[in-house]
Length: 447
Image (tube, rainbow, N blue to C red; front, top):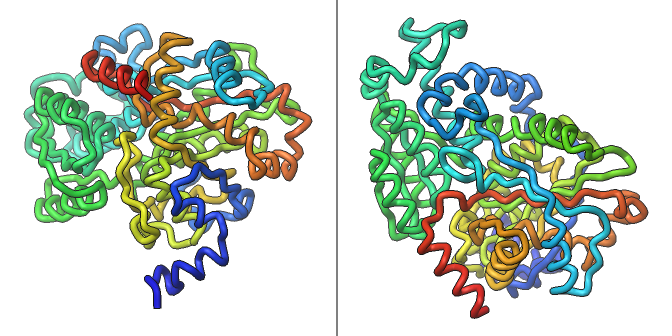
């Protein structure tokens, strides 16, 4: 008998879901989610939770503005720009014979203040919520106070009695490490072998402790969780199970709506929004999708994009096993240059809370990640990490594959593509050192 996964052999899984053959061959695929539009498996997150997070971030804005001068112009708001990228659209249409009707845009979370990635939304939010809970619990702070006082030495001394820990492949660790250390927490980041050295170096420079593992993301998270459990004063930020991370990401929905309104871009029945989100464990794209669905409803369609070597979220949704299945169960090695997406198991929390909101999952090769990264730099003079380039492939795969066309037809979008907005979510890259950028560009040039 062959290997058993979730009570079935691999051959049985292949028979039930033929797309698994292509996944195991590491071909690029688009899998439309048959559960899209259904009911959530879990209703742990509500719109009220997201509204509460939005208010909390407003309370913290005076502190952010004081502690991080780069946010002064935005008055302490941690938000990223929205770009129209018509030259990149031309590049996509030239590189592959797939017409892309509608506009192409980039949500540049690669330029988010403080940590330069989408993790500045969820990771920083959970650190701030933890700080607020502790300070209010000790009677040191009230919600009506000006939170800029949290930058005072007395608060740093207070927070130094507590610890924050996280397991990460890189960007989540950066966002949490930078913010927690700035507040004064003893901060430990457990990092997998996939994390880039410069991220470890920067964390240490910012005052965080980095513990390295010659293992993948899941091991780093599990070990971090285990060690944190021994310390009653340590808060472990659990990328696989955190509601706070999720709602922090979800605040992006209302903010994007305001940006579209300011730019005069309609999102309605005749002007669908098609969003492509790079996906690792699923928290960032899951939370963003939750927020987008809250403000745009059925007029937004979100696709998660993963490396061909690490399609953990796709396999989790497809099999219904969520975190009980690993990409390694299907013969994949979880090795990719997209370090933030090198995750063997997806978050069950996200799969159950937002799986019904996701239009589908698609996979891209590392080769294409570098081609798209270089293409964006050449055409628009915008820089992202290889992992953040994953979403750029979305329009090509959606419009250029039979499964993508089937999705468009099934949801009556085919005749509306001329009025569509294709938005790829550029999830990181703002803090990448120039020498690393040069090396990535040179590698992409060789490809």
